[in-house]
Image 1 (spheres, rainbow, N blue to C red):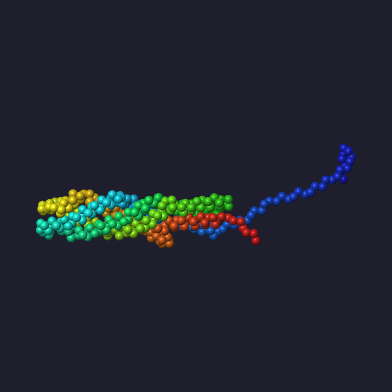
Image 2 (cartoon, rainbow, N blue to C red; image 1 turned 60 degrees about the horizontal axis):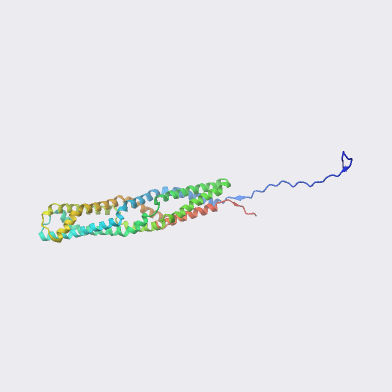
Length: 334
C-alpha cells in the first residue's frame, strides 16, 4: 500500500488491464495462373514473328500496290472507252475482208494484213473476254479498294504481339502491382485487333477481294500477257499497212469508213491497249503475292482471304481472354 506524503493517507493501488497485443494483417496468399500467362507469352511470340516469317508485310503491301495501279483502268469511263476501242477493231476486220474481196487484193501483197485477217477473230475473242472479266470485277474491285489501312494490318498484329509478350513476362515474373496495368495494355491491344476489321470495312472488302482474285486469275499470268502482246504486234503491223500501202487500194462505202475509223483512232486505241496490258504485266508479281495471302490464311484455317477478318477477331478475343485469365488470384482456403 502507498502513503501520500502531503496528507499521510494511504492510497489504493490502481489495477489497469493489460494492453492488447499489436497485430498485423496477415497477407492474403496469391497465386499466379501460369498456364494462361505462358499461353499469352507464346501467342505474343507467334504474333510478333508470324507476320515477319510469313511475309505478311510484303504480301499486303503488294496487294495494296496492285489495287492502286489498277485504279485508272477500273473507272467507268475507262471501261466504256475500252469497249468502244473493241468496237472499232471488231468492225475493221470484216471491212478489210470486204475490200480484199471487192478489189481482188492478192494474198501476200500486204503480209501484215494477211496475218491480221487470219487472227482477227481470235484477237477479238481474247480482248472481249479480258474486258468482260475486268468489267465484272469492277464492283468487287471498288469494295476492295475501300478497305481502310490494308497495309497497316501487319503492324497492328505485331504491336499486339509485343504487348502480349510484355504482359506475359510481367504476369509470370514481374511484381503483382504491375499485373493489372500489364493486363490492361494487352486487353486494349487485343481489342484494337478485334475491332479493326469492322472500323476499316475489312470484312466486306476481303470477301470482295477474294472474288476479285478469282476474276483476275485467268489473265494475270505471263503466258496471257505474252499472247496479248503478240496480238498487239499484229494490230500495229496491220494498222501500219492500212495507213501506208493499203491506201492505194480503192475503198468506198461502209468498209472504207470502218477502216478509216481504225486508222484515225489508232493512237488512242493503242495507248489504251498498251496501258492496260502493261499494268497487267507489271502487277503479276503483286497479284501472286495477294494470292499467296489468300493461301496463307487458308493454311491457318481462316477460310481464305474472306476469313482474314475473323482471324483477327479471334486473335483479339483470345489475347484478351488469356490476359484476364492470367491475373493473380487469391488462393482458395483449404
